[in-house]
Image: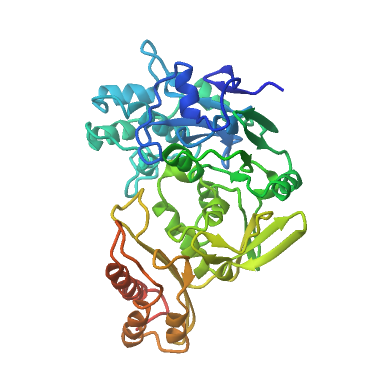
Length: 477
Protein backbone atom coordinates (compact mmCIF):
# COMPACT_ATOMS: atom_id res chain seq x y z
CA UNK A 1 0.00 0.00 0.00
CA UNK A 2 1.12 3.56 -0.70
CA UNK A 3 2.39 5.49 2.32
CA UNK A 4 1.62 9.21 2.24
CA UNK A 5 1.18 12.26 4.46
CA UNK A 6 -1.12 15.14 3.58
CA UNK A 7 1.01 18.28 3.95
CA UNK A 8 -0.51 21.71 3.48
CA UNK A 9 -3.34 20.13 1.49
CA UNK A 10 -1.10 18.01 -0.78
CA UNK A 11 -0.51 14.27 -0.57
CA UNK A 12 3.24 13.61 -0.36
CA UNK A 13 4.72 10.13 -0.67
CA UNK A 14 6.82 8.59 2.06
CA UNK A 15 8.65 6.47 -0.50
CA UNK A 16 12.38 6.68 0.10
CA UNK A 17 12.09 7.74 3.74
CA UNK A 18 13.99 5.49 6.11
CA UNK A 19 12.49 4.02 9.26
CA UNK A 20 14.37 6.55 11.39
CA UNK A 21 13.87 9.65 9.22
CA UNK A 22 12.22 12.33 11.33
CA UNK A 23 9.28 14.38 10.11
CA UNK A 24 11.55 17.43 10.22
CA UNK A 25 14.18 15.96 7.90
CA UNK A 26 11.51 14.52 5.61
CA UNK A 27 9.84 17.94 5.27
CA UNK A 28 13.10 19.78 4.65
CA UNK A 29 14.11 17.24 2.00
CA UNK A 30 10.93 18.29 0.18
CA UNK A 31 11.74 21.98 0.26
CA UNK A 32 9.60 22.86 3.28
CA UNK A 33 12.39 24.51 5.23
CA UNK A 34 10.39 26.75 7.56
CA UNK A 35 10.73 24.21 10.38
CA UNK A 36 14.32 24.18 11.66
CA UNK A 37 16.52 21.96 13.78
CA UNK A 38 17.69 24.00 16.74
CA UNK A 39 18.29 21.39 19.42
CA UNK A 40 17.15 17.99 18.04
CA UNK A 41 15.64 17.10 21.42
CA UNK A 42 12.31 18.94 21.55
CA UNK A 43 13.49 21.82 23.70
CA UNK A 44 13.60 24.85 21.39
CA UNK A 45 10.41 24.53 19.31
CA UNK A 46 12.02 25.70 16.05
CA UNK A 47 10.65 22.55 14.41
CA UNK A 48 7.02 23.03 15.50
CA UNK A 49 4.30 21.89 13.06
CA UNK A 50 0.53 21.36 13.30
CA UNK A 51 -0.99 17.88 13.14
CA UNK A 52 -4.71 17.12 12.84
CA UNK A 53 -5.58 15.10 15.95
CA UNK A 54 -8.85 13.97 17.55
CA UNK A 55 -10.21 16.86 19.56
CA UNK A 56 -11.87 17.09 22.95
CA UNK A 57 -13.94 20.19 22.18
CA UNK A 58 -14.23 19.64 18.41
CA UNK A 59 -13.82 16.64 16.08
CA UNK A 60 -10.35 17.85 15.01
CA UNK A 61 -7.82 20.00 16.81
CA UNK A 62 -4.69 21.43 15.25
CA UNK A 63 -2.04 20.17 17.65
CA UNK A 64 1.47 21.60 17.75
CA UNK A 65 4.24 18.99 18.04
CA UNK A 66 8.01 18.77 17.62
CA UNK A 67 8.76 17.53 14.11
CA UNK A 68 12.37 16.74 15.09
CA UNK A 69 11.30 13.86 17.34
CA UNK A 70 8.60 12.02 15.39
CA UNK A 71 9.45 9.39 12.75
CA UNK A 72 7.93 10.39 9.43
CA UNK A 73 6.54 6.86 9.19
CA UNK A 74 4.46 7.55 12.32
CA UNK A 75 2.38 10.10 10.36
CA UNK A 76 1.49 7.78 7.51
CA UNK A 77 -2.05 8.65 6.41
CA UNK A 78 -2.14 11.73 8.65
CA UNK A 79 -2.56 15.43 7.90
CA UNK A 80 -0.23 18.25 8.88
CA UNK A 81 0.36 21.94 8.31
CA UNK A 82 3.72 23.71 8.28
CA UNK A 83 4.38 27.44 8.54
CA UNK A 84 4.39 27.55 4.72
CA UNK A 85 0.85 26.16 4.71
CA UNK A 86 -0.55 28.84 6.99
CA UNK A 87 0.02 31.73 4.61
CA UNK A 88 2.28 33.28 1.98
CA UNK A 89 4.17 36.56 1.58
CA UNK A 90 1.27 37.80 -0.53
CA UNK A 91 -1.42 36.59 1.87
CA UNK A 92 -0.22 36.39 5.46
CA UNK A 93 -2.04 34.30 8.03
CA UNK A 94 -3.34 36.42 10.97
CA UNK A 95 -0.66 34.95 13.24
CA UNK A 96 2.05 35.79 10.71
CA UNK A 97 0.62 39.27 10.26
CA UNK A 98 0.67 40.06 13.98
CA UNK A 99 4.20 38.70 14.38
CA UNK A 100 5.35 40.92 11.50
CA UNK A 101 3.72 44.20 12.47
CA UNK A 102 4.62 43.90 16.18
CA UNK A 103 8.29 43.13 15.65
CA UNK A 104 8.10 39.51 16.75
CA UNK A 105 10.91 38.34 14.49
CA UNK A 106 14.54 39.39 14.08
CA UNK A 107 16.82 36.68 12.66
CA UNK A 108 13.70 34.61 11.93
CA UNK A 109 15.19 31.22 12.78
CA UNK A 110 12.68 30.50 15.53
CA UNK A 111 9.78 32.38 13.95
CA UNK A 112 8.10 29.54 11.96
CA UNK A 113 8.03 27.39 15.10
CA UNK A 114 6.52 30.19 17.17
CA UNK A 115 3.94 30.78 14.46
CA UNK A 116 2.86 27.12 14.40
CA UNK A 117 2.57 26.93 18.19
CA UNK A 118 0.71 30.24 18.19
CA UNK A 119 -1.62 29.02 15.44
CA UNK A 120 -2.49 25.91 17.49
CA UNK A 121 -3.66 28.20 20.31
CA UNK A 122 -5.38 30.53 17.80
CA UNK A 123 -7.49 27.58 16.62
CA UNK A 124 -8.18 26.18 20.10
CA UNK A 125 -12.00 25.90 20.15
CA UNK A 126 -12.44 26.90 23.78
CA UNK A 127 -10.28 30.03 23.69
CA UNK A 128 -12.37 32.79 25.27
CA UNK A 129 -11.97 36.50 25.91
CA UNK A 130 -13.05 35.85 29.51
CA UNK A 131 -9.72 34.09 30.20
CA UNK A 132 -7.81 37.05 31.61
CA UNK A 133 -6.07 35.44 34.58
CA UNK A 134 -2.30 35.34 34.95
CA UNK A 135 -0.49 34.49 31.70
CA UNK A 136 -3.67 34.70 29.62
CA UNK A 137 -4.20 37.64 27.32
CA UNK A 138 -7.38 39.72 27.11
CA UNK A 139 -8.21 37.63 24.04
CA UNK A 140 -7.97 34.39 26.05
CA UNK A 141 -4.60 33.40 24.53
CA UNK A 142 -2.80 31.03 26.89
CA UNK A 143 0.84 32.06 26.88
CA UNK A 144 1.82 28.54 27.98
CA UNK A 145 1.08 27.49 24.40
CA UNK A 146 4.50 28.99 23.62
CA UNK A 147 6.32 27.42 26.57
CA UNK A 148 8.24 25.05 24.29
CA UNK A 149 9.46 27.76 21.91
CA UNK A 150 12.74 29.58 22.54
CA UNK A 151 14.00 32.78 20.90
CA UNK A 152 17.60 33.95 21.23
CA UNK A 153 17.44 37.44 19.75
CA UNK A 154 13.97 39.00 19.47
CA UNK A 155 12.89 39.11 23.09
CA UNK A 156 9.55 37.73 24.21
CA UNK A 157 7.59 40.94 24.76
CA UNK A 158 6.79 41.59 21.06
CA UNK A 159 5.99 37.89 20.58
CA UNK A 160 3.59 38.05 23.52
CA UNK A 161 2.09 41.25 22.11
CA UNK A 162 1.45 39.48 18.81
CA UNK A 163 -0.25 36.59 20.61
CA UNK A 164 -2.44 38.90 22.70
CA UNK A 165 -3.48 40.91 19.62
CA UNK A 166 -5.04 37.95 17.81
CA UNK A 167 -8.78 37.92 17.23
CA UNK A 168 -10.90 34.89 16.41
CA UNK A 169 -10.64 33.00 13.11
CA UNK A 170 -12.94 34.21 10.35
CA UNK A 171 -15.97 32.03 9.58
CA UNK A 172 -14.48 30.99 6.23
CA UNK A 173 -10.99 30.23 7.59
CA UNK A 174 -10.26 26.84 6.02
CA UNK A 175 -8.28 25.53 9.01
CA UNK A 176 -11.03 26.63 11.40
CA UNK A 177 -13.65 24.93 9.23
CA UNK A 178 -11.46 21.81 9.11
CA UNK A 179 -11.99 21.35 12.86
CA UNK A 180 -15.62 20.36 12.28
CA UNK A 181 -14.79 17.06 10.58
CA UNK A 182 -12.84 14.13 11.96
CA UNK A 183 -9.08 13.81 11.50
CA UNK A 184 -7.68 10.95 9.42
CA UNK A 185 -7.93 7.62 11.19
CA UNK A 186 -4.62 5.89 11.94
CA UNK A 187 -3.64 3.41 9.27
CA UNK A 188 -1.79 0.13 9.62
CA UNK A 189 1.73 0.81 8.39
CA UNK A 190 4.77 -1.26 7.50
CA UNK A 191 7.92 0.39 6.16
CA UNK A 192 11.24 -1.33 5.61
CA UNK A 193 14.59 0.29 4.82
CA UNK A 194 18.27 -0.36 5.39
CA UNK A 195 17.60 -3.52 7.38
CA UNK A 196 15.14 -1.81 9.75
CA UNK A 197 11.35 -1.95 9.95
CA UNK A 198 8.63 0.38 11.20
CA UNK A 199 5.27 -1.20 12.03
CA UNK A 200 1.98 0.32 13.17
CA UNK A 201 -0.36 -2.60 13.94
CA UNK A 202 -4.09 -2.00 13.80
CA UNK A 203 -4.97 -3.79 17.05
CA UNK A 204 -3.45 -4.41 20.47
CA UNK A 205 -3.33 -8.19 20.00
CA UNK A 206 -1.18 -7.67 16.92
CA UNK A 207 1.24 -5.54 18.94
CA UNK A 208 1.42 -8.22 21.63
CA UNK A 209 2.18 -10.84 18.98
CA UNK A 210 5.01 -8.71 17.59
CA UNK A 211 6.70 -8.04 20.94
CA UNK A 212 6.29 -11.68 22.00
CA UNK A 213 8.19 -12.78 18.90
CA UNK A 214 10.64 -9.83 18.86
CA UNK A 215 11.29 -8.71 22.45
CA UNK A 216 13.97 -6.29 21.23
CA UNK A 217 11.35 -4.21 19.40
CA UNK A 218 11.34 -0.50 20.24
CA UNK A 219 7.87 0.62 21.33
CA UNK A 220 7.12 4.27 20.50
CA UNK A 221 4.13 6.50 21.14
CA UNK A 222 4.90 10.21 21.23
CA UNK A 223 8.62 9.52 20.51
CA UNK A 224 9.63 12.36 22.84
CA UNK A 225 12.22 10.07 24.44
CA UNK A 226 12.98 7.75 21.52
CA UNK A 227 13.43 10.71 19.17
CA UNK A 228 16.22 12.09 21.33
CA UNK A 229 17.98 8.72 21.22
CA UNK A 230 17.78 8.72 17.43
CA UNK A 231 18.96 12.31 17.01
CA UNK A 232 21.63 12.68 19.68
CA UNK A 233 22.77 9.14 20.39
CA UNK A 234 22.48 7.65 16.92
CA UNK A 235 20.26 4.78 18.08
CA UNK A 236 18.86 2.80 15.16
CA UNK A 237 16.49 0.11 16.41
CA UNK A 238 15.95 -2.70 13.89
CA UNK A 239 12.22 -2.85 14.68
CA UNK A 240 10.08 0.12 15.71
CA UNK A 241 6.46 -0.49 16.75
CA UNK A 242 4.06 2.46 17.06
CA UNK A 243 1.23 2.18 19.59
CA UNK A 244 0.12 5.79 20.07
CA UNK A 245 -3.23 5.58 18.29
CA UNK A 246 -4.37 2.13 19.46
CA UNK A 247 -7.95 2.36 20.72
CA UNK A 248 -7.28 -0.22 23.43
CA UNK A 249 -4.57 2.00 24.91
CA UNK A 250 -6.68 5.17 24.93
CA UNK A 251 -9.18 4.34 27.66
CA UNK A 252 -10.43 7.17 29.89
CA UNK A 253 -12.96 6.77 32.68
CA UNK A 254 -13.70 8.39 36.04
CA UNK A 255 -15.70 6.10 38.31
CA UNK A 256 -16.69 6.11 41.96
CA UNK A 257 -13.83 3.78 42.93
CA UNK A 258 -11.11 4.49 40.40
CA UNK A 259 -9.85 6.57 37.51
CA UNK A 260 -8.50 4.70 34.48
CA UNK A 261 -6.07 6.36 32.08
CA UNK A 262 -5.04 4.64 28.87
CA UNK A 263 -1.27 4.42 28.47
CA UNK A 264 -1.34 6.03 25.01
CA UNK A 265 -3.21 9.15 26.10
CA UNK A 266 -1.01 12.21 25.84
CA UNK A 267 -0.41 14.34 28.90
CA UNK A 268 -2.31 17.21 27.27
CA UNK A 269 -5.31 14.95 26.62
CA UNK A 270 -5.32 13.70 30.22
CA UNK A 271 -4.96 17.23 31.59
CA UNK A 272 -7.93 18.45 29.60
CA UNK A 273 -10.15 15.42 30.14
CA UNK A 274 -9.56 15.36 33.89
CA UNK A 275 -10.27 19.11 34.01
CA UNK A 276 -8.83 19.50 37.50
CA UNK A 277 -10.58 16.48 39.04
CA UNK A 278 -7.20 15.17 40.27
CA UNK A 279 -5.62 18.29 41.82
CA UNK A 280 -2.20 16.64 42.24
CA UNK A 281 -1.97 15.94 38.50
CA UNK A 282 -3.37 19.40 37.74
CA UNK A 283 -0.33 20.83 39.55
CA UNK A 284 2.04 18.45 37.76
CA UNK A 285 1.03 18.98 34.14
CA UNK A 286 2.03 22.65 33.70
CA UNK A 287 5.48 21.80 35.09
CA UNK A 288 6.06 18.79 32.83
CA UNK A 289 8.42 19.87 30.02
CA UNK A 290 6.49 22.12 27.60
CA UNK A 291 3.14 22.19 25.85
CA UNK A 292 4.81 20.90 22.67
CA UNK A 293 6.20 17.89 24.52
CA UNK A 294 2.98 17.24 26.46
CA UNK A 295 1.06 17.26 23.18
CA UNK A 296 3.05 14.19 22.10
CA UNK A 297 4.32 12.52 25.27
CA UNK A 298 2.12 9.75 26.70
CA UNK A 299 1.67 8.78 30.31
CA UNK A 300 2.54 5.17 29.54
CA UNK A 301 5.71 6.25 27.79
CA UNK A 302 6.84 8.31 30.78
CA UNK A 303 6.45 5.25 33.01
CA UNK A 304 7.75 2.79 30.45
CA UNK A 305 11.19 4.36 30.25
CA UNK A 306 11.78 3.58 33.92
CA UNK A 307 13.62 6.88 34.33
CA UNK A 308 14.37 7.95 37.91
CA UNK A 309 13.71 11.59 36.97
CA UNK A 310 10.39 11.28 35.17
CA UNK A 311 7.82 13.67 36.61
CA UNK A 312 4.71 11.48 36.59
CA UNK A 313 6.01 8.64 38.86
CA UNK A 314 6.34 10.74 42.07
CA UNK A 315 2.80 12.06 41.64
CA UNK A 316 1.34 8.67 40.75
CA UNK A 317 3.17 7.03 43.66
CA UNK A 318 1.55 9.54 45.99
CA UNK A 319 -1.80 8.70 44.40
CA UNK A 320 -1.19 4.96 45.08
CA UNK A 321 -1.56 4.15 41.38
CA UNK A 322 -1.25 0.73 39.82
CA UNK A 323 -0.54 -0.44 36.28
CA UNK A 324 -2.33 -2.93 34.06
CA UNK A 325 0.30 -4.85 32.06
CA UNK A 326 -0.85 -6.75 28.96
CA UNK A 327 0.79 -9.59 27.06
CA UNK A 328 -0.24 -12.55 24.96
CA UNK A 329 -0.48 -14.43 28.26
CA UNK A 330 -3.16 -12.09 29.56
CA UNK A 331 -3.20 -9.09 31.89
CA UNK A 332 -1.87 -8.50 35.38
CA UNK A 333 -2.05 -5.57 37.79
CA UNK A 334 1.05 -4.33 39.62
CA UNK A 335 1.32 -1.56 42.17
CA UNK A 336 3.44 1.32 40.89
CA UNK A 337 5.32 1.23 44.20
CA UNK A 338 6.59 -2.26 43.21
CA UNK A 339 7.04 -1.55 39.50
CA UNK A 340 10.52 0.04 39.49
CA UNK A 341 13.25 -2.49 40.31
CA UNK A 342 16.51 -0.72 39.34
CA UNK A 343 17.96 2.00 37.17
CA UNK A 344 15.66 2.01 34.11
CA UNK A 345 14.53 -1.48 35.09
CA UNK A 346 10.97 -2.51 35.92
CA UNK A 347 8.77 -5.53 36.59
CA UNK A 348 7.44 -5.29 33.03
CA UNK A 349 8.52 -8.35 31.03
CA UNK A 350 9.90 -7.94 27.51
CA UNK A 351 6.63 -9.23 26.02
CA UNK A 352 4.42 -6.92 28.11
CA UNK A 353 2.98 -3.50 27.43
CA UNK A 354 1.54 -0.94 29.84
CA UNK A 355 -2.15 -0.81 28.99
CA UNK A 356 -3.79 1.31 31.71
CA UNK A 357 -2.89 3.42 34.74
CA UNK A 358 -5.39 3.02 37.59
CA UNK A 359 -5.78 5.65 40.34
CA UNK A 360 -7.97 4.60 43.28
CA UNK A 361 -10.69 6.87 44.66
CA UNK A 362 -11.49 8.65 46.89
CA UNK A 363 -8.48 10.89 46.48
CA UNK A 364 -6.49 12.25 49.38
CA UNK A 365 -7.68 15.66 50.52
CA UNK A 366 -4.32 17.45 50.76
CA UNK A 367 -2.05 17.07 47.75
CA UNK A 368 0.83 18.89 46.11
CA UNK A 369 3.54 18.41 43.50
CA UNK A 370 6.88 20.12 44.02
CA UNK A 371 9.41 20.26 41.21
CA UNK A 372 12.87 21.62 41.92
CA UNK A 373 14.70 22.49 38.70
CA UNK A 374 16.96 25.19 37.31
CA UNK A 375 14.19 26.65 35.14
CA UNK A 376 10.57 27.28 35.92
CA UNK A 377 9.37 25.44 32.81
CA UNK A 378 10.75 23.10 30.14
CA UNK A 379 13.39 21.52 32.36
CA UNK A 380 14.32 18.19 33.91
CA UNK A 381 13.76 17.85 37.64
CA UNK A 382 16.64 17.85 40.08
CA UNK A 383 14.11 16.67 42.67
CA UNK A 384 10.39 15.98 42.33
CA UNK A 385 8.02 15.25 45.21
CA UNK A 386 4.36 14.23 45.21
CA UNK A 387 2.24 14.50 48.39
CA UNK A 388 -1.14 12.99 49.26
CA UNK A 389 -2.29 13.44 52.90
CA UNK A 390 -5.51 13.04 54.83
CA UNK A 391 -6.06 14.81 58.18
CA UNK A 392 -8.77 13.76 60.64
CA UNK A 393 -9.38 15.77 63.82
CA UNK A 394 -5.96 17.36 63.52
CA UNK A 395 -4.18 14.00 63.17
CA UNK A 396 -2.48 12.69 60.03
CA UNK A 397 -4.50 9.61 59.09
CA UNK A 398 -2.82 8.94 55.73
CA UNK A 399 0.43 10.11 54.18
CA UNK A 400 1.89 9.05 50.86
CA UNK A 401 5.00 10.73 49.46
CA UNK A 402 6.48 9.92 46.04
CA UNK A 403 10.05 10.92 45.22
CA UNK A 404 11.99 11.37 41.98
CA UNK A 405 15.59 12.33 41.33
CA UNK A 406 17.01 11.03 44.62
CA UNK A 407 17.68 7.37 43.83
CA UNK A 408 18.16 4.95 40.93
CA UNK A 409 14.37 4.63 40.78
CA UNK A 410 11.32 6.69 41.73
CA UNK A 411 10.29 5.58 45.23
CA UNK A 412 7.91 6.03 48.14
CA UNK A 413 9.32 7.84 51.18
CA UNK A 414 8.13 5.06 53.50
CA UNK A 415 10.22 6.04 56.53
CA UNK A 416 8.85 9.57 56.40
CA UNK A 417 5.31 8.29 55.93
CA UNK A 418 5.65 6.13 59.06
CA UNK A 419 6.99 9.14 60.96
CA UNK A 420 3.85 11.09 60.05
CA UNK A 421 0.87 8.73 60.23
CA UNK A 422 -0.96 8.91 63.54
CA UNK A 423 0.78 12.08 64.66
CA UNK A 424 -0.72 15.58 65.00
CA UNK A 425 -0.56 17.93 62.01
CA UNK A 426 1.73 20.39 63.80
CA UNK A 427 4.92 22.27 63.13
CA UNK A 428 6.83 19.96 65.46
CA UNK A 429 5.64 16.82 63.67
CA UNK A 430 6.49 18.25 60.28
CA UNK A 431 9.94 19.46 61.34
CA UNK A 432 10.80 16.04 62.73
CA UNK A 433 9.46 14.29 59.62
CA UNK A 434 11.34 16.72 57.36
CA UNK A 435 14.58 15.62 59.00
CA UNK A 436 13.66 12.02 58.12
CA UNK A 437 12.70 12.93 54.56
CA UNK A 438 16.11 14.55 54.04
CA UNK A 439 17.67 11.09 54.57
CA UNK A 440 15.45 9.21 52.09
CA UNK A 441 16.88 7.76 48.89
CA UNK A 442 20.47 7.68 47.73
CA UNK A 443 20.96 11.05 46.00
CA UNK A 444 24.03 11.62 43.85
CA UNK A 445 26.07 14.53 42.54
CA UNK A 446 25.55 15.40 38.87
CA UNK A 447 25.34 18.46 36.61
CA UNK A 448 21.80 19.25 37.81
CA UNK A 449 22.42 19.28 41.57
CA UNK A 450 24.65 17.94 44.33
CA UNK A 451 23.57 15.11 46.61
CA UNK A 452 23.53 17.45 49.62
CA UNK A 453 21.34 19.94 47.77
CA UNK A 454 18.86 17.23 46.83
CA UNK A 455 18.63 16.03 50.42
CA UNK A 456 18.16 19.57 51.69
CA UNK A 457 15.41 20.17 49.13
CA UNK A 458 13.50 17.11 50.32
CA UNK A 459 13.32 18.43 53.85
CA UNK A 460 12.45 21.94 52.73
CA UNK A 461 9.75 20.58 50.44
CA UNK A 462 7.83 19.01 53.33
CA UNK A 463 8.07 22.23 55.34
CA UNK A 464 6.73 24.12 52.34
CA UNK A 465 3.89 21.63 51.84
CA UNK A 466 2.82 22.07 55.47
CA UNK A 467 2.95 25.85 55.24
CA UNK A 468 0.89 25.87 52.04
CA UNK A 469 -1.86 23.73 53.60
CA UNK A 470 -2.34 25.58 56.89
CA UNK A 471 -5.20 27.72 55.63
CA UNK A 472 -7.07 24.83 54.00
CA UNK A 473 -10.58 24.74 55.45
CA UNK A 474 -10.78 22.44 58.43
CA UNK A 475 -7.00 21.93 58.72
CA UNK A 476 -4.96 23.70 61.34
CA UNK A 477 -1.56 23.48 62.98
